[in-house]
Image 1 (cartoon, one colour):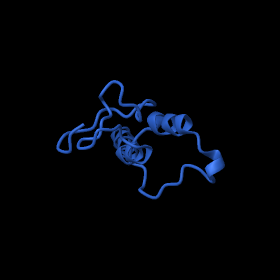
Image 2 (image 1 turned 90 degrees about the vertical axis):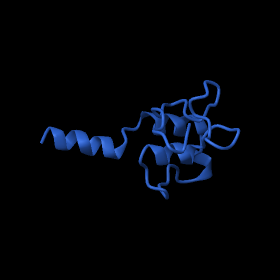
Image 3 (image 1 turned 180 degrees about the vertical axis):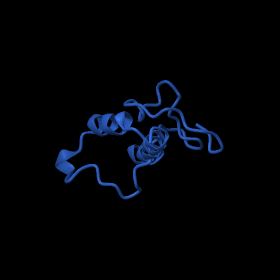
Length: 81
């Protein structure tokens, strides 16, 4: 990924660096769940879980990766109005 380019489509595998699509632009790591959620348009303080007992990384990645970005939903809705 690059700071001055569009991000790749965020998928359910967004926290894996294996294919190179979701590598942080400056650090040698994959993007975090929070970074993926921000790219999808979730608010910065959006709470995905109620407690740490509910935390399952794969489930959160699936939730984020399957989401339709809010901006895209708005654009589609406006086009069919």
